[in-house]
Amino acid sequence: MQAESAPAQGAVPMEWFTSSDYWLSRLVFQRGLAAIYLIAFLVAARQGRALLGERGLTPVPRFLDRVPFRRSPSLFQLHYSDRFFACCAWLGAALSAALLAGAADRAPLAVAMVAWLVLWLLYLSIVNVGQVWYGFGWESLLLESGFLAVFLGNEHTAPPVLILWLTRWLLFRVEFGAGLIKIRGDRCWRDLTCLYYHHETQPMPGPLSWYFHHLPKPLHRVEVAANHVAQLIVPVLLFTPQPVASVAAGIVVVTQLWLVASGNFAWLNWLTILLALPAVDGRRAAEVLGLPGPPHLAAPPVWYEAVVLAATALVLVLSYWPARNLLSGRQLMNFSFNPVHLVNTYGAFGSVNRSRQEVVIQGTDEAVLTPDTVWQDYEFRGKPGDVRRLPRQYAPYHLRLDWMMWFAGLSPGYAGSWFTPLIGKLLVNDRATVKLLRTNPFPGVPPTHLRARLYLYRFTTRAERRATGAWWHRTLLSEFLPPVRLEDHGSSRA
Image (cartoon, rainbow, N blue to C red; front, side):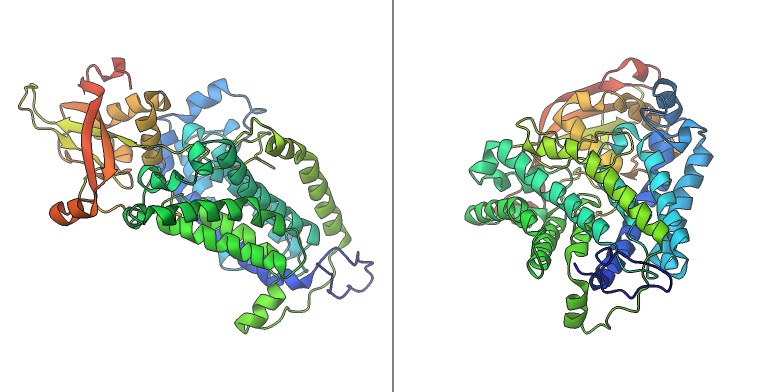
């Protein structure tokens, strides 16, 4: 990267500090990141009350009573109410929408940086009280990406080279960490058979997952081998000169789009795609796309250079722990080494399930239970339920309850803090909770009893699909929760 911006009058610029070659890459990255922020804040606004509210499944006030500020810094440590939480979420959504529309490029540099910093602080505050609902790697990835965006500047100055390199370092950790955890983890990644199972057993299949699952097994092996190349070799090339780095970034984009098509992983894949863009030579991309070249970009002010250098030094110091983790035989996956989620370790699917177990919640309005009692299923928006319903595409939107229901199917221990409260909410038709579901079979009068059963789900074969029209086949495995009434649900165990 070579600085090409003209020096401002009276300034003594560091020639290497900025590069106008990456103005287009920065523009697309920041607008895309604003879009992801917008989705994340909308998720918080729409789901926060049911999951985290004062009467939610895992109430924030109860969490704050036992967790101090130093362990979980958040605005909500200073004050919490459901209304204040909603105000923060909607404020974040509004600010994200403004940045998506280009407000940062119309504002002075300092104002733009403050806007990005406010977004980061608001989302950090939500994540740090989010408990199990915000325990996913893409939360930390969004926060780390958002922190770097604070220092990328706007159209008033050329992109700073140091921050561009830090975005590559972040992308490297995401991809290389995911590659290492696979090679070190499940044997099926080494013998190239993991995709025999993954499309069927992933947390939330998409509308094409059934078709991906039925691809020929030799092609599945090719997919796994290609994944190893994309995650263990290509990330190293991000640090090479152009145009090789741009090609490497392009490979990352293509592989992530493949994952977008095959499943639902919230904004993980889209954010990884965005992180690849700062490695693309924007000047050459503009030429290929027939776009105008970079505008005249002034040399950065001295205070901005100092802030960028300080941020870079902070990231380099904090990089010790994730770098050591990459070299460790006991590699951690999706772990934050500090309470502000900066310079984290990432990874995905170190192990792959061979079968899919789903918890199905059922209710009845009959006063007395008999062997002939009719039970009706509660349907969730994204997780498998009705065997004839085609899985939907929700990503980059994140269905947090649906994801945790997948974990509950793996082990009741994952549901210990929230499943019993969920049953209690459904027994009274709690409005906020019911809104998280696709269908409520008792919209008028609440059910008299609820139960939960554990089923084995598998994709139908092509022949079964033609004969029945079903996408899934399910077999009852066991009882997950025995029938309970409102009077006694509090003593039940998930």
